[in-house]
Image 1 (spheres, rainbow, N blue to C red):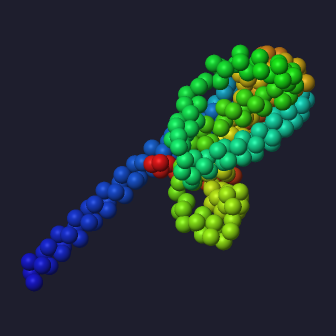
Image 2: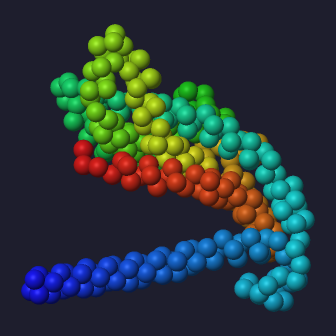
Image 3: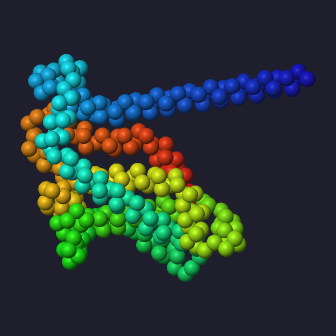
Amino acid sequence: MTRRAEKGRQMIATQGAARRRRELIDGVYMLGFSVLSLIFLVPVVVLIVTGLRSEPDFLQHGVFSIPTGIRVANLTDAWTIGDFSTTYRNSALITLVKVPLGLLISALAAYPLAKMRYPLRDTFFTFFVVGLAVPVQLALLPIFILDRHLGLLGTLWAVLPPYVAFGIPFQVFVLRGFMRLIPGELMEAARVDGANEVTIFVRVMLPLITPALATLCIIDATATWNEFMVALVMLPSQAIHTIPLGLLNYFNEYTGSYTLLSAGIAIVVAPLLLVYIFLQRFLVSGLVGGAVKT
């Protein structure tokens, strides 16, 4: 009994030491991530504070000083001077059309790649994966020629085909991984009940991949909102400029005023910050859920 009790005490002591070691490691990780979070937040805080202070206050006290007053008029001045109402409208229109359209095409392509068996299925998927390695800069000239022949050049819709095309490879890669997690028995049961492939896709598959669709929606909307190179080439008229082009024009005109520049940048990044703040749980769960071996 004494020997058993001694072994029990040693086991409890070992488990307690292991638990304290795990808690210590978790604490170190938490501290490190907290420091990194603060480092990443510093530029955002500096941007917002600079955009809400007066120019003399900024020049006199510097970047990291506490502002003597809040000047909300910087935001309204930047909005009016930079004509952000036009660029916001153009970017919002492109994003609202491109994101749902791209996700629909990608989901339709990922479904047979994940749940159907046919010759060259893996070869077709390889073509999509190869598309991840093709930079958009390499295709600018062919895109320009194609848009010109289609009569889209110089219109707001000139950027829609390349935006959709270059977003599809990553979306298909993620959606295929999610769809392969879904048990095939669900689709077999639907087929027994008389459902065709369209019904299975709409009523079975799409509801089950909602986390992946939400994640891709956030990523795709952010990428579309921030895209600069294609828009610079395809949208020459200022009336159809998107947010990045409007910010470039605003920067070229007001390089001497740091507070107005910061206010303009804050106006541009505000929607993205709100999206990440309110939808970050979908982003994390979607990325983790799709990280499976396919």
